[in-house]
Length: 163
Length: 297
Image (cartoon, rainbow over all chains, first blue to last red; front, side, top):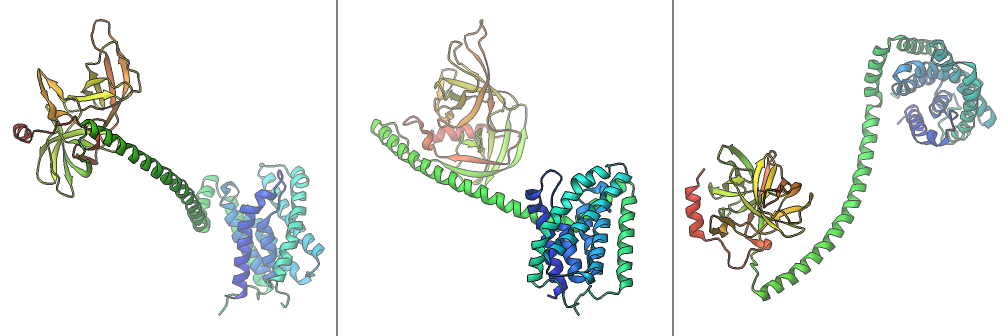
């Protein structure tokens, strides 16, 4: 199996198991880690912007099917997050946990901000209050959870440092 | 040739994000009903296999749990059965010592219900077994729930017409389990029966279980012992009891345990068996045959 498929499968599994098994245990109120976003970020860091964009779109679409009233919202937010992470890959310093965690936290904040922007635009939520009370702490949490996962991906050889 | 999305140009990356964003916005812009329909289709394609796998895993877990509890139940039932066997042996020995035992064991022969004949005079079903059966008139026929009828006329080595309990004119000698009071069960309507000849001052309660009695049904002044079914076959439950002041007997309504409208597989009880008839009350073969010939359906 080539490395791209191996990476995609491993990260798909991370998103699946993380969101279905781990996230409910780690979520406090509205604050919890976004494992699927971490998986998209690692995929983009490992394989580039194209893979990150497409992977984020597909993963977002899978999540969207569970909430049909927001169909397209997760796929939009995650494909943009995958693209951004892929573009940041060239300037990314692998091996510094603080940088890795901050990158994922910024991605998560952007992802959630876009989410809230669309929801507030359609009148289904406010913007600022949930941004600071839910999105920001969740982004920090996601960044913290991402650090060991990115380290593990690096140790497993999933991150493509040679490109 | 391996798939590798990592070697794309900046233009293809921008194209990819533009296409993904356009598709996402297109989905977001769909009318609500259409969005739900599309989400359903996408869910079937994208998450269907996972959902089916998760359901399979959950089913396996549930079946394993059920199996574990069933194994425990089977083990407990085995212990109970052994205890019951021991008690039965002791009881048989005592009855034998008293000269009461009819020790021939009873077998249940599964039969498929093939035809049903409902007339003003009788409700009959034609049952067929896989193997040949030594049919006898008045042989009881039961379901898992309880008694449903008795053999009316053999129709070959492996088939027989069975008269259902709710057939007009049928009377079955029964008794109440709790008190041992005897009575005669007559069909009322559907799955309900009247238990007649129980004195108005007798102790009968709603919920009392009714089983067959081996006391022969009296027709006029003539006892017909071959009418008697083995004692103890479950028949029904008392659902209503009244004691009208002007009558000598109670009005007892009994709901049968077996449903007469859903009969697919029944069991013919072969032999008098463990249900214990009175000693020496074996059916008179010649008399049985002559009645059978007269009563061809």
